[in-house]
Length: 324
Image (tube, rainbow, N blue to C red; front, side, top):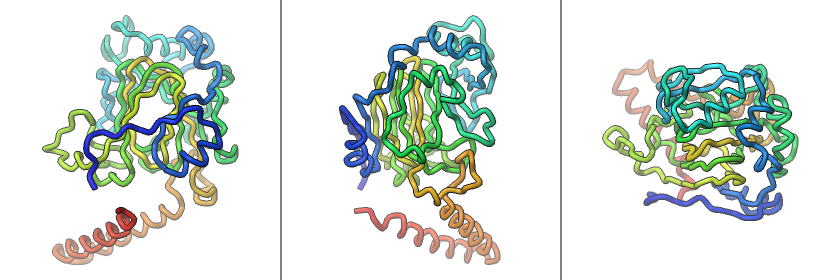
């Protein structure tokens, strides 16, 4: 069944742990949560306060000459700035007096662990003074916590459509709460069941402009059901694992993502401290698929085509068996 138009993400007010766990979490759909206590960050996190607390510690940021960042074609560069200088630049609505590419360049920060190859981001470790101001919602058990990611965006910045990864093309199967602390943000989401309509390259969609897509190049994109919401300061957005999302900062914005493990803990690779690997069972399945495709290479072209189509039909029957 095709989705016509846009679907508003459901909104829940005065959400506590019981309401979240019993009525929201089991649906496995995005939800905007209002009235969740996030702490003094809502009042404190002004540009001046952030600059003072973050100080001159250096941070690695994305810098783009256009506000619509594209990770597939890398239309941005990475540069290092003192945190206080970065915040001041990102918050600026006028042209920049100092810049890397152009006077109207856009900035984006996604915090990383001290050693990004070995440990995930943790607000308490990277920005301990700021972490005191932010209260992580107690919706999940502490042992399932994985990371808390600090994000800051220039006004007008739009990020590519993706599902969550840690810096490579392997999907992390984790749930996500996006806390919008300051500024307003539009979020567009797509269900994992629409993956075949999103023209994926790894974890990212090739359709960069979700508002005016090139339908000659991406004709099936219209079949994907678009969920949409506007986050106000203090709102939380629950993004279930594998849901695709595209964000647009309507204003200079500060947010914190909190990730936690959704699957049983033994589903994850114990030798994966960074959390960027597929679940163990999914890894085995993908490896088996690669071996099967390699075996088809031993056949003539017309046989390869025929048996590959049979494989596709088999996978489709499994993928769509629960649809109504």
